[in-house]
Amino acid sequence: MIQVIVQECSEYRQDLLQEKITAGIKLLGGWDQFVSPGMKVLLKVNLIGPKKSETAAVTHSEFVRALTRLLKKQGCEVWIGDSAGGAIAGIAPTAQGLVISGLKKVAEEEGAVLKNFDKEGVVEVIPHSPYVERMYLAKPMFEADQVINLPKLKTHSAGIYTGAVKNLFGCIPGLKKAEYHRLAPNPRDLGHMLTDIHQSVQVGLHIMDGVIAMQGEGPTAGEVYPAGKILMSCDPLALDTVATAMLGMEIEDIPILISARERELGESYLNQIKIGGDYDQPPHLADFKFPKRFRSAKKGNHAVLVKLIDFLKTRPKINAKACKDCNMCVESCPVQAIDEATKKIDYNACIECMCCHELCLHQAVELKRDSLWAEIFTRLYRGTYK
Ligand code: SF4
Ligand code: SF4
Image (cartoon, rainbow, N blue to C red; front, side):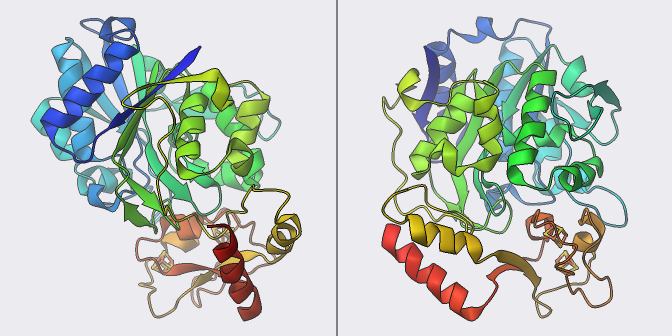
């Protein structure tokens, strides 16, 4: 039976992090199952953009430090890598993100090698799904002897949830990400691309940083939620199944995970997963705030309301007062729907990928229902199922 380890860990203290991760690895069979001395081990972090670790938008730098120290004790060479989303002046802000998140400092202090996926070259793979003929994935994913995925526990304004499966989207270097968003605008279609990526690379282990999580309008504009958990598994879908259960969601609620289930990327039925570590059932994260777009899957009771909510679309709107005119959203929009001068969005062109909301560093892209009545209705409805 597939195992997911759930450990309690309420702070980024090195002794605590290392103790909890070590205990979890033991339950998964020990480090020998995953690494051996001399191996190059890539830690694939979540570096969505130039955000500080304390915002819960990125894998916390102290979490990465703990893994680096543990792997060095095993005699491994450690690489830390990812590619950020978005663009400023046509350049993906990965290098800036490595500095602001604190990952560059950790790499320097711990003797790890930084791998900026935008600069390391690509490997061409043939995806199973029909959206692109060829995919280009960052070379370090193939050059490392072992890859450990380090996702962050977060909500996502378009995809509802982002975790172990979604974290590999960062294997697509630089601005190619926007192109793939354009070709697969629906989160369900994007899920097929994510499954393609997982099926093209070898990842040995997934360790989720849920010490602090992001709730509300993630993956960058939400609020910090002190979840106090570390999740570990060899199966990314099983890990996401347990993580979403902790939040009170089901796989059916998360469109980007539907394809992973259909294409049997891993286990997605809770009763087929053995939970170990500090818990034997998914611990409930009380009062966790969902993103606005979340339609409760508590079908039956509210089926009509759910349909009505679906009809009342959530759209991105730029708040001119908060906007700093950096043009990150303009340059990152996959369909050029944002006017550079006025910052008005052309909703006929917009594919609702929410990249502008995800990437704005100033939280100036708000998600609004189409009308005031729709907004009021949504709030009332939310009160009925919380
Ligand atoms: S909305 Fe945000 S990303 Fe877009 S120009 Fe304004 S500050 Fe920059
Ligand atoms: S305006 Fe925003 S949500 Fe619409 S397509 Fe562009 S980036 Fe995506």
